[in-house]
Structure formats: structure tokens, C-alpha cells
Image 1 (cartoon, rainbow over the protein chains, first blue to last red):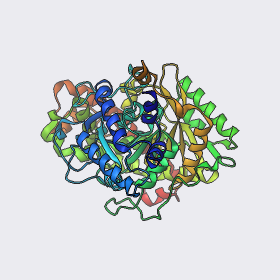
Image 2: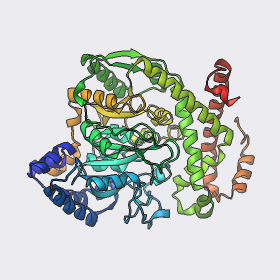
Image 3: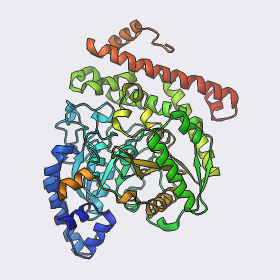
Image 4: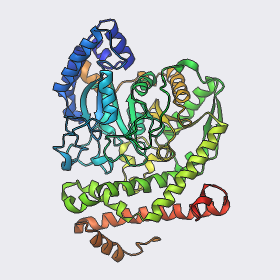
Length: 471
Length: 65
């Protein structure tokens, strides 16, 4: 039992190797995960839709492909997909009563790439309604609980994807990140959360992607993040922001270390936002590790980040309203209470407000680019606070305070990754965020890998789930 | 409050003009959200104007603010 549990909680890279050695098969892993989902999903609400039939067919197809020697790094790997990413033939609800029966005719571009690679689509994961509301128990699907401590809600609009992975219900997960919605759940559930450079992964087929949201990756290790990114990145002419670029193997050079790298810390901004004591202590310890590994830690001044957070919030409000304008007027009561108010507030953003926020976006991009000429990476805590409950206090949530360290980099488009860097006294993990130059995911992931390998945090499992398994 | 929605009365008129069927027990919550959002937008407007004054040759120069 415990041995198989080790497989369930392994990395994509490890399971792919076990497939290659024929020590285990995709069907065995998929069946085991489906069994766990049946048992644990009622407790955690990670999935809105479990794709049992489809997953078993995918697993059988993967076995045939592996036998032919035509497998990829993702063949037979069960992946969960956020339910705001379109899946052909499988309902995609965005956790809204409005889309309770919507079955897309086409896959999102990112799902098509998963299919081509032979991944197993195991289910569609929970989110707050359309990714823009405060989750409520009377939502179409109730909010997911954090498997690390089920007394607490799971944070982020990609919360279900994080819960599914942290609870051992899949081997990797896709989310979307418009202000931190992948990096924040990664931080609070002991996972790696990558938001790549803007539009490096096609956004075609995402519900209401807007101008600053991107596909994000949730994995157990940095290597897995690199594996997924290598498969999913690429030009897509149907995404207006996508650029033709040469294919990159993001697993290349991961072990290059951080010796000689300069890591900038925007301490002034971090202090201005304010962070909870345990977050600060974990962050400072993480910087000490990077220093020990040979990186130089230098302070950088980036006051623009405070305005970038605000501009991200204004833009998201305007774009959510724009996407829902006519439906809000026609079908107000079919939205959940929080979702309809959150979407309606954007009606009060003027064109001038929106353009001022866009001006901030350009200035913030310039300022962060300039800072990244003097340093190779930026480092910040991923979240200023430990719990979803703190981030959802009305005075914080209405201004996006919980996303203060993540949302600026949605606005500027820089790639950012959250890696586990500690465990708090209430049993919830803490994340370290690293930010890189546009399209320099190689350096970003190399530094994240070096930190991960030097620390034990990525080997942690949620005690509540493990206790449940082993008694 | 700064911005166009300087009173709750104007806010209520705008809701009606937009055809949003906001329920009576939702008005105060939405109003508070809009107040916060307008304050944030106003803060950004002031900062952008300040940057345009300090850095006339920056990208803001092209915005002719």
C-alpha cells in the first residue's frame, strides 16, 4: 500500500521512468488515481468533473503507444485541467450554473497539446466562479479545502488544480494565472507553480483569458514543470499575443546551479505591503540558502510594483465586465452572488481608468526589465499571508492585497515560479517566488531547481492525507 | 470619493442605465466595491500623470497625457 502511495505521490519524471522500465503501467496508475478521487474528492472538492471513461481510454491508448516505443515524456501521465479551460466533449463549467451543461466542441490549444503528447485527462478541477469571485458554499461546486489542513480553504482561482495534486489525485495540473492564481495555490500547498512568459503557452480556449492571464503549471518538482513547459510552449497564430520562437527543451541545464547569479530583492516594496512573520522568516531563510549556493543577493528599488498591483486589479475588473456585460444584464440571478457583484464592479471602470492602468503596465514592464539588467532574477515571497481566509477578508480581497507579490508580474508578463520554502505553525506550506526575464525560463527554472535540491520542502506531503492512507 | 461616481445617487442611476438588476440587499456591497475600485483607479491616474511630468521622454510621452 505504502509503496504504491509512493508512486502516486511521485514526480512525472519518476513515473515516466517506471513506465519506460515497464515496472508499472498507465492503466494501473490511472485506476489507482480514479479510486482515490472517488474516496477523497467528496472531502476536498478538487474536481468538478471526473473524466473516468475518458481517462481509462487515454490510459489504454498510452499503453499501446508506449509498447510501440512512441511515448513522450507525458505519455500515460494523468493530468488535471482547470474547469475554465475548454475540453472537447467534456463539460466545462467554470464553476458556474450558467455553464453547467456546456460541452465544448473543441479543445483549448493547451489541451490539444496534452492529447498529442499522450497525457491522460483525468478530470476538470474546481475554481471560484469564472475565476472572479469570493468562493461560497452555495456555489455550483463548493470551494476546495486545503489538504495540508482541511480547516482552511484552498486559495487561488486554480485552487482545485492545487488540491488535486497536493492530495495525490493526479501527477500534474494545469491552471490559469491572471494575478497569482497558479502561484498562490502552489505556495500554500507545497507545490511548484509556474506562470511562464506571457503567451509562451497559447491561451486559445481559455474562458475569458483577457489580456494578462496565462496558462500556468502546477507540479511537484521543478523538473516536472520543465517537462510540461517543453511540451506545452509554442507558437499559436490563434492567440494574438503568441510569438513564433524556436522550440526549447526547458529540462536542459536545470542542474547548472546559481553560482554567480545575482538575485534582486525589492525589499522596500515587500516591507510596504507587509508580510506575516512566518512568511518573512521563511523568505529570509530561502535567501540565505541561495546565498550559500553561490548567488549574490542585492536589494533593488521597484516602487512601481505597488502601482502594478493596482493596475492589474483595474484591468482584470474591466475585462471581466466586458466579457460578461450582456449576460450579466440578462441572467443576473444565474450567477452566484459574489460572482455577479465582482463582475459588475468593472462596469464602473472608465476608458480613462483602463488606459491609465495600461500606462502603468508599460512603465512597470520598463522598470522590471531595467532591474533585470542589473540582476538575473528577482525574489519575493509568493504570498504575504498564510491562509486563504486572510486573503479573502473584504478589505484585502477587494483590492487584491493577497496577490501583491504575484499580480505585478501578470501585468508585466515576466515569467515567475513559486517553489516550496517552508511549513508554517498551522501546517500550511509557504512559497518563494522567483521572477525572470521575458522568455528566460531556462535561468528561472535553473535557479528554482538549485533551491529545490538544496532544501527538503518539495519532499513534504500533506499529513492529513497521508494519515488517512496509512492509518 | 474621487472619480465620476461621486455620490451613491449617481452610482444608482448608472446601475439602472446599464440594466443591471442588482437586488436591494446587494447595493451596499457593490457600492463599497466600486468605492474601493475608484480609489485605486484615481491613485493610478495621479501616479501616471506624475510620471509623465517627471519623465517626459519616456513611453508616457507618446501617450500625450
